[in-house]
Amino acid sequence: MIGLTHTRSAIDAHTHVHPNAATLLLDVMEANGIDRVVNLGILERLGIPFQEGMRAFQSVLGDRLVYFPAPDFGDTAPGFGRRMAEELEGKIEAGACGLKIFKELGLRHRDADGKLIAVDDPRLDPLWAKAGDLRVPVLIHTADPLAFFQPLDEGNERWEELQLHPDWYFGGPGFPGHESLLAQRNRVVERHPGTTFIGAHLGNYPENLAYVTACLNRYPNLYVDTAARIGEIGRHPAQEVRSFLLKHQDRIIFGTDLTLGWDTYEKQEDRTEIKQFYDAHWRFLETGERQIEYPGYPVQGRWKVDAVNLPDEVLEKLYVCNAQGLIPGLGT
Ligand SMILES: [Zn+2]
Image (cartoon, rainbow, N blue to C red; front, side, top):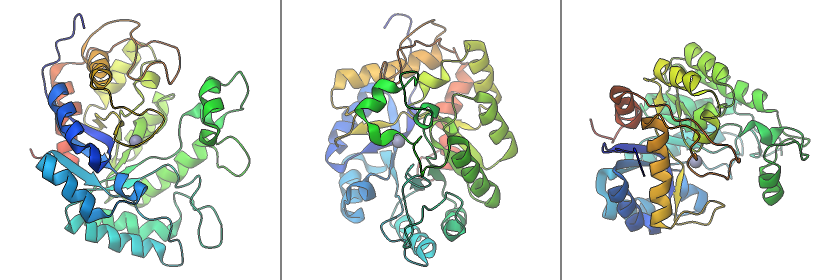
C-alpha cells in the first residue's frame, strides 16, 4: 500500500473470536502488529462453557488475549441483576477483565413478564455497580447505525443491507428510537460514576460527532471505541474528524470488531483480506490520503473517506495507552 508506513504495535480492543480460531488469531496478530486483543462475549453468545473457552484462549495466546463475558439474559426472573453481578464477580476472579453488553439490551431482551428490559432498568444496577467495585470496564453496545431506525424504503441509505438482514431493522413498532436508547445508556453512565463504560462503535452515534462530544464532556466515566465505524466517522470533513479525535484523544480506544471462527455476515477467515482490513485502519488514522476505502468497504455504504493523519503521540494513545489505562490485563 503506497504511502503507508505503519510500524507500531496496537491493541485491538474490540474483537469476537471463537476459541477454535485462537491459532488463526495468533497468526493474524503477528501479521498485523496486533500486540493484544480484547475478546468480547463470544463464549456466552455461543454457549461455550467459560472455563473451557478461557483454557483454549490461554493455551494459544497466553496473556495476549483478555476476555469480557456477557451476562445471561436467558434468566430474567426476579433478582436477575444481582445474579448477573455474582456471575460477573466469579468470572473476573477466574480471569476475565471486563463486562460486555450486546445491543440486544434495550432492543430484544425481555423480563420474565415479557416486558422489554430498558438499558437503564434499575434491576440491572447491581451489575453496573459490581463492575465498578471490581474495577473492570463495561463495553456497552447500545442502539445501532441511525439508518436501522429510520423509515425502511429505498431512501434508507442501508436499504440493500437491510433487505439482506431484516432482523437488523429496528424502525418497526415495539422498538425504542435511536436517541431514546442512547439516552437510556447515558442515564446508566450518569447513575454509576464509579463504573467505567466504553461505548462501542463511537458510542453508536458516529453520524453525529457533536452528540458524542457532548456525552464525553458530560460523563467523565465514558469512553468510546472506533470499532466498525471508520466508514461513518470518516464521512465527516477530515478536519472536523481530526479535531474531534485530537480533542478526545484520551477517551477513544482503537478496536475493529474483527470476527473470527464463527458464522456471521462479515465472516473473516482469509488472511489477505484481514491484512487489508487492518491496513485500511492504519491508512485512515495515519495518512493524509483522500477518498480511500474504509475498512470493510462497501458493506456500510458506497462512499469513501478522507484519512486524518493523526500525530504519533495521539496514535499511541488510541492504539495502546488508553486501553491499558482502563482494562486490566493489558500490561503497561
Ligand atoms: Zn462487536
